Image 1 (cartoon, helix red, strand yellow):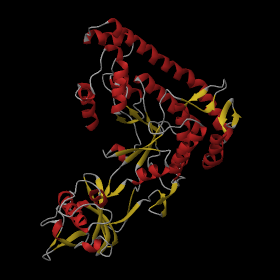
Image 2 (cartoon, one colour):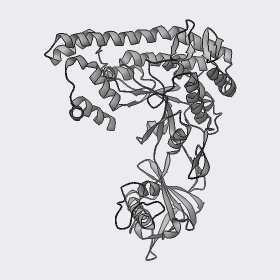
Image 3 (cartoon, one colour):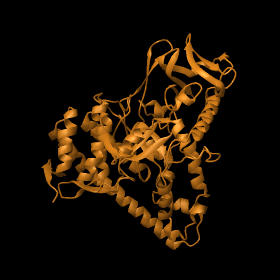
Image 4 (cartoon, helix red, strand yellow):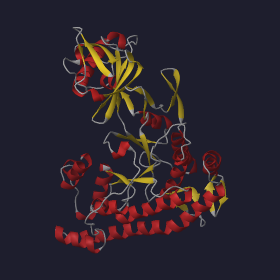
Length: 494
């Protein structure tokens, strides 16, 4: 039988309680009595609101079901008027200006790849966080970009024929992303820095520079014999790594052993779709891994190929700028944490009446608490440089539920002593009631919202669920052609 701790009228799973009090709170300025009294207060005041929102979901669905059952022929204007009458559709604000401040550059200024990974799996979480930087050579070698023909098969070990094709492809990439004043990177035999500029020696001993010298940002090693050269293209960085003694570099005329690309700028550490946390022990594992990430201390040991390995978070990248000063680049993806939505409950905490507490309320409190040491700069490796905590909130139905999340985050900030709007919100647009009221949803969180992210599978499922009484659903291939889905995809890609 699960052991439980009573505190402030709550019954808390002992494993969770001990993790919070013995591991997390010592890294903060909050004591256990203050925390759990505040948790109990938030649960008491917000649980009725949460329940009311779920009841409204049910009422609206019953009304929509009844509409379809009573109308065999559907008129769009009449249906739209009906949705407005029952409150499913709300008036859209004329204009909305997002007012979110203190947002890290990975979100505020760059549109880059984003990973989603179950935070319950430490190895997966570390891999995703470290995917900020990735080997172009490895990516090319292991993909079908390089055809497995003319002796270039992948095979079991390293195939030098395939490796040569990888190096040739990478040189073509350099010609596109880092064009020279004349000639081609394919002909390069040496890379060096002279008088603050990149000098590339070609096969005929000709020395050339970059078309855009500003692309060179820094280096590692000595200017005349750099071990790494840092460049920027369209706001994303990449590194030419040089080592003529490396098993790859020694086969390259210029000693290039790899090209390291800035890849996954952000990662969602998921507590929801990819995770099944059904009790206090499961939730503790989820929170402990997130805490380890925020403290910069998460590690994982595993066996690979008969060798025992340990994975940790990558450190920041250090370079010497052309003026001799130091340049530091973030070594890891900027991490979000995706909380559970408003629907689910979990027995990790029982309220004063013995009822399971809403998991979304728990997640908001404890994932923010686990990020508190990072917020105060006590982490070994920083996540946010703007003192922000990034939470993705899924499966919200319309602007009222977004407003409830805004209220919840505000309550958590007050409990933890955070500045207002330190918790940022990523809105998952995966319910029809959110899609059709998206402008009003954004308005409900205009001081917090940092992105709108569409879950196409969930969104399609809710479309089917909402209109199930309307008749036979289109086949999957036809759904993909519908205007609502193609428009959502266009908006997301834009």
